[in-house]
Amino acid sequence: MTNPEYLSGHGRSLLDRRKFLGTAGLSTMGLALAGLLDDDGLLAKEPAAAGGVAPIRPNIDANNPYATRPSHFNVPAKQVLVIYCPGAVSHVDTFDYKPELSKLDGKKPPGMPAVTFEGPTGNIAKPFWDFKPRGETGKMVSDLLPNLGQQVDDFCFFHALSTDTSAHPQGENFINTGFTMEGFPSFGAWVTYALGTENQELPAFVAINDPRGLARSGKNNFGNGFLPAAFQGTDFTAMNPPNNLQRPDLVSPEADRRTVDLLQRLNARHLQKYPGDANLAGRIASYELAGKMQTSVPDVMDLSGETEATLQAYGVEGGSELRGQYARNCILARRLLEKGVRVVQLFNGSDPSGGNGVTNWDSHSKIAKTHAMQAEIMDQPTAALIADMKQRGLLDHTLVVWATEFGRMPFLQANGTGRDHNPGAFTCFLAGAGVKKGFSYGESDEFGFKAAVNKTTVYDFNATLLHLMGLDHERLTYYHNGLERRLTNVHGHVVTDVLA
Image 1: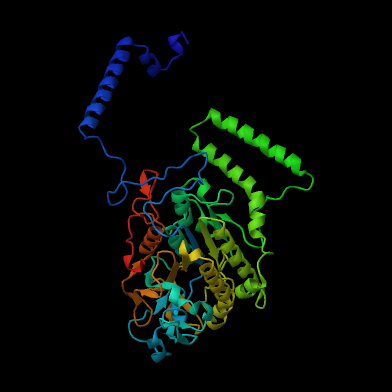
Image 2: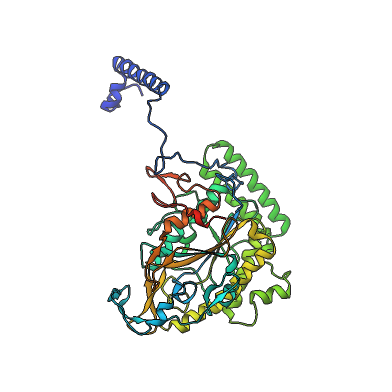
């Protein structure tokens, strides 16, 4: 443009030769000053994570975001299986033996609150199932979970866990993403972001939803949050494969192959024009993975090769229909781990709108009936899965996490048949690579009401899980909106006492 009348005031100022030379001179001086400050080590440091440590960012190839990446330090665990039970399993009726509850059954000792999450409280209630010593360690486990009880010599229990919330959506978010709010990456997303995966034909992170549907917080439990979309969990079950994998009948295999080849050439040509576009490369990688899944997913979901003995051990037949479906999900989980999938998250419980013990473990009433219903679905298949993994050598390099969002109260609600939410104490357990066997860490008080000895926060729990996967929870970060974000926020310490 030659006519200055059409320029703005700022535009006209740029045509002034003296202002141009002045601006250029100042810019050159700024560059020189930055160089001198850098030589003297006086420039601002790289962004640091909480605690002042330098972040360790995984070196991710945008063209292959799922490639295997090294851990921060060597550990035996290379994969992780998370068995998550939404609804809050009652620790005082399963793994946390409190004989004082039987002594005070029907009474209301001092110090107990008058009102909890869902209203007025009732009296202390002894466990609804008898506890017995199990295994060589003599660990006390209730008759509600007899099959898992037989395996306690392989388990490492956390008995003094506590959480920051007594609401299910926030509780699920907190234990699975490290934050009560939505929008943060899940544990599985962090692990696959850091480590990639061994199998390039299956997703790095698979979430196997309960046969009844999604958990309360839905896909947030296995979402990628602000991490690249490549690291979100892919959800499917033994009964419901991923959508749109099958080739339409009207398209021949040869035509399908030619279409895929053409798309690959077009995508490669397009990527050459934008070599630094990580989002574009990630989308192309996800499409290519989807193409590979057309053959890999049907293969891993085909349970016809499983022996009759295996199907019986998992409880595919002979129980409720839901137990059979969950058992098939457990077999699918084992098959995915055998194929090298980095993270498998297996859900036992569902219902985004509640459920009151019918579709999950949230037993505000009739706990004797509803917890028994959930245990019939969960106990045998889960125990068979862990035993099968042990027999096949998978536990040598796989960390197993059994978790729920919080516990339940040692006293009944006013209705006299259910237990309310208890964020002050709950139990989870680990097994497999890198974990002490037949060990219990921490203690709740004599009632199972509050964590009393070696109190462990959810931040500590997640920090320990990352450590067991060879990742430093303080240095595994992602720069987002001006902050070095991490799974454990600015908290958490590794519980070294549970490390083998």
